[in-house]
View 1 (cartoon, helix red, strand yellow):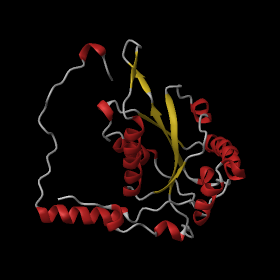
View 2: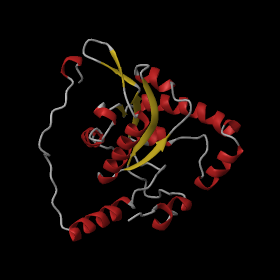
View 3: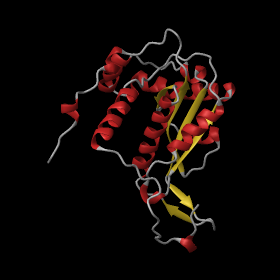
Length: 230
């Protein structure tokens, strides 16, 4: 994507201009909130398949996220193969066992109690798709010379938010899973040392009797998350 011989600034006209009245803007903002507040983290997945094309379009949307110097330092690996998913589950549960056996510390484990999680991760088998998000710490020019990526955690975090929102918009539910350490995913998925696995996103449809933790619906009110200076 990048070439050392052609790195220069060139301005183009804004290609996608949106014109809304103040009332239309407020209506659009409220409509988005009404939609996104219905997003839930779900652990109970049905066996209903999800077409590959849906996953591809959601990842395409994630790829439009802003990034440091526009280096787009992310890579997504989408997995539907049952054997592959099971291998990921076994490796993740091995790390999670250490976590819940005390590696996390008492305070962290206590904070997780209302969420109801443990080392057993059946959703990694049951969800029709797993999407592993990798952060690319450096890249390479066309001639193979290495270059640094900038604001990588921030950029990949934004792209991941785009991904979760796109999946929700497509009528799917998700669960973000972050076993630590996660380096086993590089070898398992054939990704280079320049990439760091950030999370595993389980994707699919909820079961008819899917449950979510009650505490997960307790969101901070606006006056606790917003300060306005005007």
